[in-house]
Amino acid sequence: MSNTVSHKALRIAGVQQDSIVDGPGIRYVIFTQGCPHHCPGCHNPQTHDPEGGREADAEEILTQIRGNPLLGGVTFSGGEPFAQAEALVPLAEAVKALGKHLMIYTGYRYETLQKMEQPGVQRLLALADILVDGPFVLAERDLTLPYRGSANQRVIDLGKTREQGEVVLYRSEYDVLSF
Image 1 (cartoon, rainbow, N blue to C red):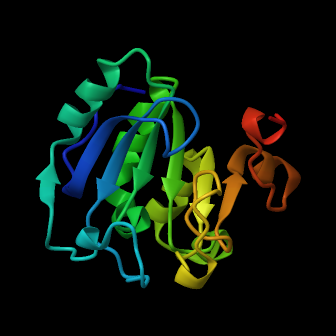
Image 2 (image 1 turned 120 degrees about the vertical axis):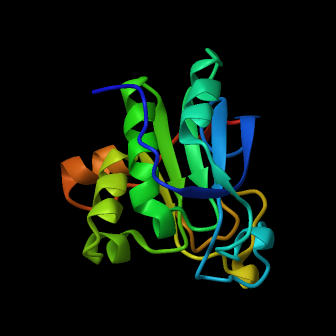
């Protein structure tokens, strides 16, 4: 597999080249543009409009990812990444070919994504290592939760979930430390 990406149109709101809050380790975060969920209290409401943001050069993004040897992984956030699943698949494949971990945030539940018949959705889901699923619910907002904004959202270890055939929640090394 090549470490280059095809030129499918990808709309993004922006990127964060070295985040430590959007997944384990140091991460490159891509904020996709367009979201059908419109969750009240959303952290990124500027990403809702599918016509907003800008068209991204996936090859340029990949060059930035390659250029940072400290990156442990890449996170697709939103907007709603699965609204642009087909455009994200080549980038996700290139990220995985580089040996990077892939985390995706979505307002959809994992079970809903599994039932979607779009090949891009299924391929993107198959490439992800961790999925944070479910809509942000303002009444369940909790800023102390790792990697998510509300208690209804799950941080799913997709590798273990696929192995065991049932949802397995992600546990980081920080979950077992006591201070």
